[in-house]
Image (cartoon, rainbow over all chains, first blue to last red; front, side):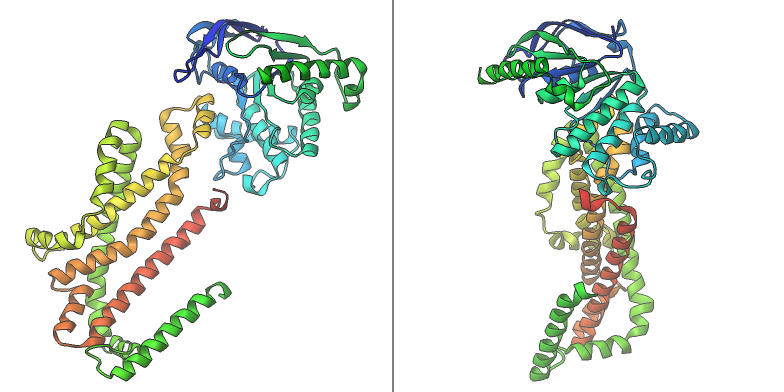
Length: 252
Length: 247
């Protein structure tokens, strides 16, 4: 298992209610897992726990069987906003994780070159983030996430701020990247269609707080995929079902 | 150039009106005309540029330098320690209401005519605004960026060096640009109160001689000097901060 939550309970100190109680779930190595649920239900909190920004009150989170407190650089986090540093060039932004890991200069330069080529951004190394479009900024942010060297990538609604066409383009791009890299991706979204198109498995936060399990749905589609797969009757059915479910929760 | 045209027109307009009124009053010891001031500036060029301007700039630059160093240290200390921030920040803000000009004579009393009394007045006028502005810059660091760095395994000093300093850099430049005129004023006031040289002192001496144009000449020089320093800093700022438009 790439990632396992074992009996995890968590409550924000300022809240009167628990976010999750005795939560169990796991993610297989190399899979593409989306976590879906209405806003404010604790999706991002899951990432904060995995990242170690928050500590669970009880239970344990392990990556490849090792508790995360004993690990370093086990997850690459890509936030909703690209959070590129405006005073750094693309190159300097991308190299930030390696810089913090005290990598030497030659290694940094080589890795940077390679990753820029991989994400299709050669030639913009010396540009500043303010000179780039929204889609390009997200790609740079993704490249930065890749250079953490982690096998598991945590993507928190990375495309939600983009316009419709850029979003579709980026989804296809991400799928392509994932197929080539063989990394494990955890992807938070509230967009049902996005989750269906991208993931091998969708986890639905099925109950309002506190929740203790995630409802698992395996998507019956093979890779590589294209958008027309979303037109298949069983996918349309699945989509309707998910929307109904999330809607009910939102009302409750 | 086109951008400065409106402000240039206003300046020229004010000078024309001033010239006109001065001509009407026709008493240079009450209101010298801009032209008379320029002529006097030229006549006094030697003592002004060789003796008094260097003296004032010496006080200004020394005071500013000490203020920047102390202000930065205080801002960093308050950023590091919340206890220190809570203890000092309100006191500093409150201290800004103390009229420095009113207590400046005390420093002259303590330090005599040496440079340190004047430098102290300058420091007192600029140190706190610098500390507060830079500290506010540190505080404007985006929490999300800090957390991103934490997930990348950054240490406290990494966060300070790679995030807080660049975030506060525009504030740092604003602080200095604000502090330059203040320090010039501080130096001039101190010289006015007690000195043997400097533009403030010179202006006061001309006053006792009822030389109106002679009072204004060093003041003109003083503001031109302050503007020049601010321009140099703005130039450096533009070279260093290439990303400001986004913030």
